[in-house]
Image (cartoon, rainbow, N blue to C red; front, side, top):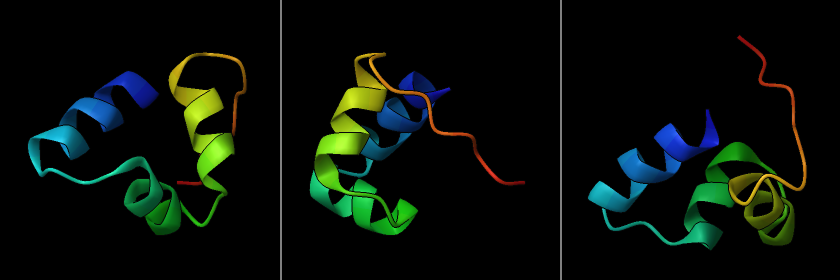
Length: 44
């Protein structure tokens, strides 16, 4: 899931900080999600 989000956001030239801010999580938590070290449930 985060791989798809990362690819979509990279296409828009957003940084991890901008992406994490949009998701209201810390940048390091977002980074951990991208590399698979942390799973954050997404609210639909």
